[in-house]
Image 1: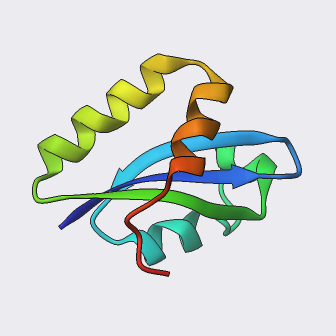
Image 2: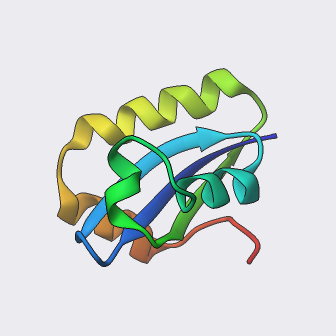
Amino acid sequence: MYYLYIIYSQKIDKYYIGYTADIDGRIAKHNRVSKGFTNFGKPWILVYTETYASKQEAMAREKQLKSWKNKERLKSLIKAGSDHPD
């Protein structure tokens, strides 16, 4: 099982889109000290997920969402709902 996820930082008012097989571990990693974009926005909160059977499907969806480059479109997707069981 693979997950497409969107996390949000209120601190920098930005979304980050990624994919993983371990959603909880990946979010924890984003919130630990590290180098890179997500280091500046901690804390990150999970706001949206989609579940896929294969890594290739999750990667393709990540690429699609990143190509949108439109915050309002992402907000609409998030508002419409997630399939992540909280």
